[in-house]
Length: 206
Figure 1 (tube, helix red, strand yellow):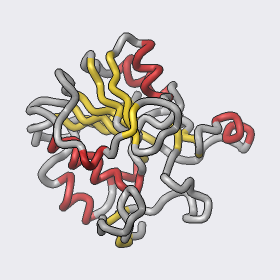
Figure 2 (cartoon, one colour):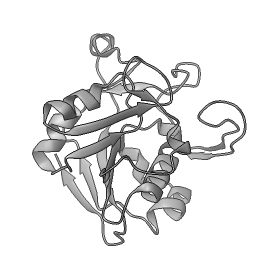
Figure 3 (cartoon, helix red, strand yellow):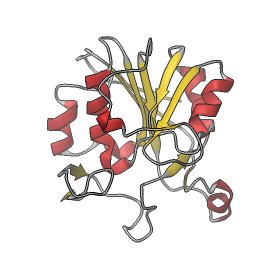
């Protein structure tokens, strides 16, 4: 694992100094400029079979709508936003949001991994008590002393829903190219925080 100091914010303008913990499975040269790795909608299929989500959900890093569209198919009312206009949802910098969408008590997304801790902490700051922060993250997000001190020590997830079968997360949403290249060697899980919860974390395989 490596720890490095980021000198650019999500916009890449050099104003923020986020501390990023954890190595990526992609080199800096290989990574998409804005850390866009689309999630297979299968991740939602498996989630809704094992966990009850609220009716209204904010997908705050929606990309091209892979997760949003599947949630809508399952009957959810989804507010979709992203920093970058990829032809889906509204353009909004999540870190500049200071309120939740009306009557929404759940934030669900696959965040840019290098800012995942910031997404969780900002989500918990926005959510009402009892609201849910549901993040699609690498299983290795569990490790790291600094991450523990900053995030898990006082705000542990209520659930870690570990996939028993690998789920694809494809650069720029190119799932076919990824499958043709041999699939994924990365393990993912759904991490679920409930605002105000400070008990033990339950790990479930899904």
